[in-house]
Image (cartoon, rainbow, N blue to C red; front, top):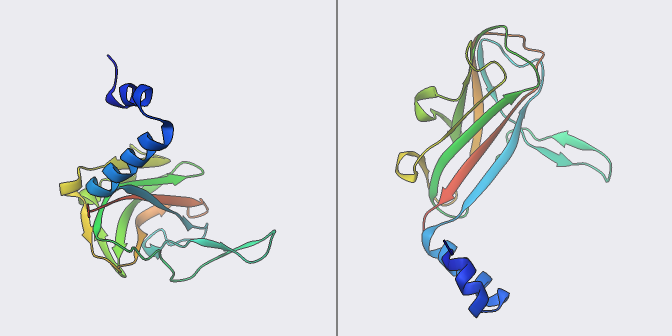
Length: 167
């Protein structure tokens, strides 16, 4: 089967195809990954820890930002989340929550979780209509909520997938 893009590519030059795809993305909304958000070792195994981003402090060094989350310039929804650790969980649970303008909210009923089944990673992807809505100008981040989680010496990282509403 020949895809429409391949068929178009034979009739139009690459710039025309790319322009058409860009216009389509603007009409239907586009996706963007936010993060990674870091939870360095020493996080709370019982309680809430807010994810942090990093920024360059020089040409060769980085530092953790405190309380800074990306601000979106268009309304949309968080439709995906991924939580990973650099080792295995040994006890308890660690649940990822999305923070929209500072307010933590369960994502997909708490399905992104490190537990007895998902020892070092967990992710979920939702349909647009099921995602967590955000408005133009909101900040988007995440937090982890521990319930007897060990070890707290793991380095935890999260990424979020957002899809913006069409123009």
